[in-house]
Amino acid sequence: MARSTSDLAFFVAVAKAGSLTAAARKLDLTTAAASKRLSALENHLGVRLLNRTTRRVSLTHEGEVYFENAQRIIEDIESLESRLSSTRAAPQGLLRVNAPLGFGRSYIAPAISEFAKRYNSVQVQLMLTDRPLVMADEAIDVGIRFGEVPDSRLIARRIAVNRRLICAAPAYIAKHGRPQTPDDLAKHSCIVLRQNETGQGLWKFTRGNKAYSVKVRGPLSSNDGEVVLKWALDGHGVVMRAEWDLAKYIRSGRLELLLEDYALPPADIYAVYPERHNLSAKVGAFIDFLIERFGKQRTTW
Image (cartoon, rainbow, N blue to C red; front, side, top):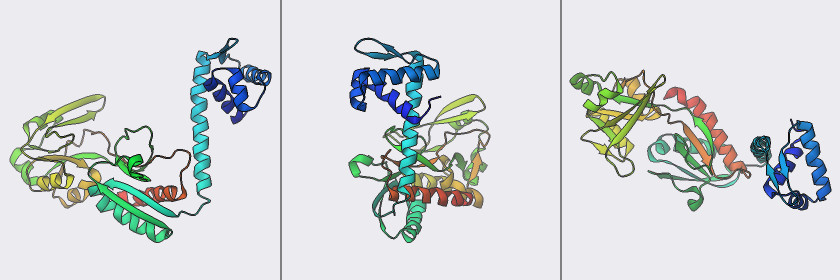
């Protein structure tokens, strides 16, 4: 292992510069001193990290492994230091939050109400939308997202575990029967939450090591999750929704769980933000608050 994180930073600088001379200039060293330090690092590790020519250096296989992990470690340390330093500052200023419509109304808005009481120097703007806003374009500080976060430029912290579930009203089940496998859904009326301008849906399940994909159909579909849920409560068919949205209806008996032995892709809830190295006190405080709140609240879903 390296003797210090400065060795990691030194090696990353050399690898990125592509030559010892360029790296030495950037690090305010002589080329001879940079070459000596690189040799000492390789001797310490017992492997050759770089192939050297008179003008350039290139990574060996071991060098590629070391470079990849060194970059990750440096980023993690910088992120940790930024987070710790931000805790010394008092949260203040304008905080712009984007959340999905239904979840935002039911959970994020009440959370912000409590957050505002604790941090009265923070002004919060909550924007509820049916689709996630582009954070950079709208100057969003924190976004609430479900499932995997596709934008690798965003940093994500999970604020709650959340499952997707399959349900139907007791009246529908009494009339049409209970599906026993995912393939049975092809014979049922399924209420589809329309996405990407299509009225059809592909529902994916796993059980053990086996995966199932079912193309579901039904006479009703919508791009609004609350509408889809209302139709399911009225007995029009089978619906797939997130646990937070269904839990109270399952507890009351208005909806019944189906296909409980099969798992659907998770819909874990994340707070995402675009800043890697400059996490502000207000953003850090808000995300920590959400994690604390949802850690307690999820048991009531």
